[in-house]
Length: 265
Image (tube, rainbow, N blue to C red; front, top):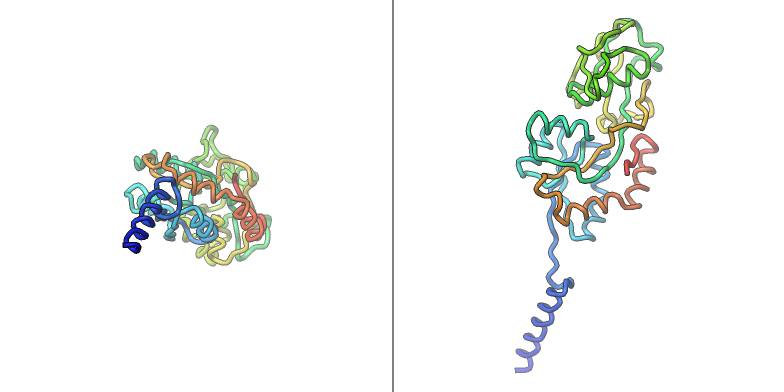
């Protein structure tokens, strides 16, 4: 009888604790997050144990391109992704009709142009071949960088997504070819120079500070965490963003990347 009473008392106490929000029946929420290799993946791995303390179990999946993470998120195969900046997301939403939204800023990757053959931009000869990413936002980003550095001129009013067709002046007659962003590091052996997103440079063991031309850290290209629009107000979203924005993660970014990747919040 005493054992039975004790058992009932323990169960009642546990139930009362659960109603009060106590730990007896606390549940961990699994979140599936898509990233690209390199810093995005590394940073989320550092976020993971901090998120676990807040009841979030991050299941991180790496994707080798910029297309599938948004497809998977929109299809419900992921709960969030962390790999893109806002102009790219806006373009994807416009072109593909995704119901995906930004919920928090992450990091900024100043994009650069690299060469395996030349030590400075001044050494690049007339008529040389330059590889750039073929997606509208990152390719356009490089064209804007080249214009900013006086290499080319673009049509007025092109915004953030100029294309090669928008070039109005190319005094050194550079041949600009477009490749998938993930393939640009591999092109270095075949071209005079290649524009490479920092995450792919890091993944290919290229020092981001070795770029012969580099974008300024300013501008709209801070990366972000995205979720489906239907999920944006769920409690786990703000918890995830808050953990990412913690002092521990900001310190990790500063120490790990030495300015090649910048905290964007």
